[in-house]
Amino acid sequence: MNTYESSAVHPTILLVEDEPILRELLTCALEDLGATVFPVGTAEEGRRLSLRQAFSLLLTDVRTPGPLNGLALAQELHDRQPATRIIVMSGYHDAASTTLPPGAVFLPKPWALDQLLAVIGDQLGKVKPPSVRPAA
Image (cartoon, rainbow, N blue to C red):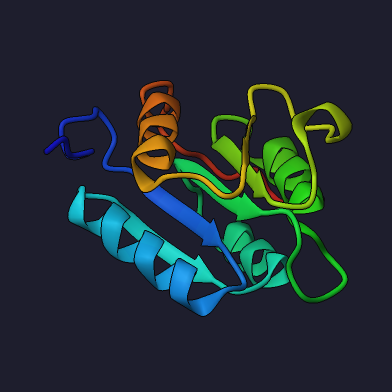
């Protein structure tokens, strides 16, 4: 089994998923591989966390409850933390109709866990040490 502990940076992952069972499954799988996971149910909660801490990776669903969606969070996080890698997931949008921040990856739902973990591993291979830019 591969782990993320061998990477130069111990990865911190901001996970934004409004489905509690899926959020818990992803949290457990990523923690088992050595990541520190910050799971939240809305993009707004993710925004609040990202104002206080830098992350190696944002893994977000597009559709979450509240006024902010995952795409807007991805763009905002990219602007403030350009070294953060981003994966956007959705069962309602497709890659052709979704504008992503530079370097972000779109993963359509449903996906197999192995497929998701491979995409995460690929993105984490590109990670630079996280840093936070002050909010404007």
